[in-house]
Length: 219
Image: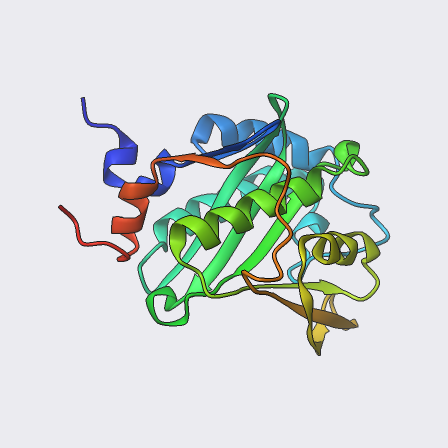
């Protein structure tokens, strides 16, 4: 029987490394992820994200969260795509790890981004899930480098980047919340600088995904 993943291969990806599993966000998982995010992702007095999506009023949070993920599916193309994967740690849903890119077949780079439920902070999960995503992109998608970024007042994210091997790549002046200027540290990771996690990475569904984004000819 034909599945949705047969038509849209991003829904067929699973990446496993020890206790960490990254898997496609089905609508069933999306509802559970929304609950994790709604319980809190960061201190409300802080804002770690370029787009302040966690500032949405409580009554609008779920519709906004769901619409973002449905929109990234609808707008996925070879020219511009966002791959967001649910993160499970020891079988428990904890957050999302993603990568965004444009013109990947030419640039062979993208920018990682993630969020982790606040209740799961401080356990090394953020580092592990970034390592899993970077290993996948370098080893299975032929990336030349991987970018990231964090506001300079977000030491936890910057610490994760250092542990994984990213190096500084300039500072950007960005609008964060309405009327608020924030300095954002750009980061870049090369295959030679990448600090891998302790567990081997196993991937299923990658052949169809590679063909879908144009890396391989469809058989």
